[in-house]
Length: 212
Image (cartoon, rainbow, N blue to C red; front, side):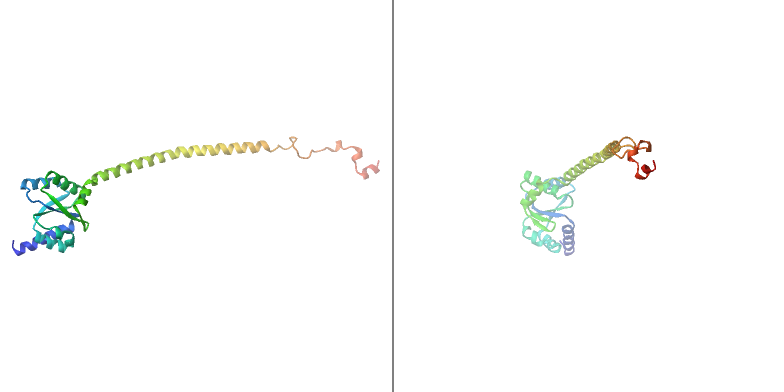
């Protein structure tokens, strides 16, 4: 490979390290061209599978700042799955293919700038995909909105019932107060009015008695 081609290859690999959400390093020794094509197809849009040269990849990893995470893994026939989509789907695709084709060896990788081991990639593959999680989230939000709508719909009825109960209570209290207060001149406990004709002579004042 000419020097200019090497520089271009390193620059492309560096850009892919930097723009990808993660990268999984594998060894593909013994896999046929048809099997590699099958693997690329199984990854779909979640990742691209690229056969790389170790020397150029080490330079690119150094320029991308992930040499410590990947440098020691770059030995033997190497290929990298650069993840552009769902990390879980990419891990599951690699895991499932390696189980069916043991010649594909998952050696490790880098995710969000941090090294991940083959065991961690296996655990990633066991998680639910982004689409499933989003569907569950949407379902939960829909159920919550339905419950909220039911509460809001019940509020007018509950407010009307409360207003009616308050009105009935106020009317009851007003009726009880009116029954307790005696009407004027109805024989209540107030002082009785006495007409002048009903006063006996003995109850007249001394001045009136002396004039007789």
